[in-house]
Length: 169
Image 1 (tube, one colour):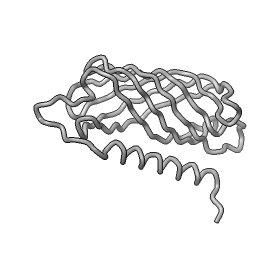
Image 2 (image 1 turned 90 degrees about the vertical axis):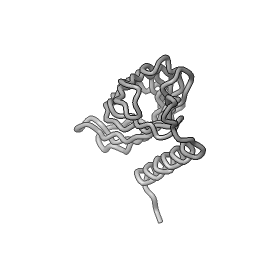
Image 3 (image 1 turned 45 degrees about the vertical axis):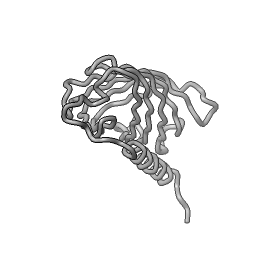
């Protein structure tokens, strides 16, 4: 049985997603109706994101992404952090670019209310590095998304959103 690179990438990111979901939900407590959720309180917190990007027209390639962001929640509305990610691009027949890119970025997030379901805006900017060629500079990365955050447990929330990312080399 032969597995091509595209199938292997999909399996890798599916496995990563399942591990993240399992670890995040392993030992959580439910939100007490009288208690404010932890992710709206001031303090340090970590965020793990898993996603898929569809290439735009003829200039893009589909990719799978994982981000880990760690930062400080300044108020119920504002979070500022630094993150590192991994992008795995599907091969594109017309372009020769790295298939594994590691972005390092600053991340700003804004919650619009303190309820269990909150609209969310996120933006990030940084640099990417080509993982296949000795961490050579792969250019600027700029992106953001808008979506909804759903409080699941006191320390866990799910975010669903749609966004745009530009990788410039």
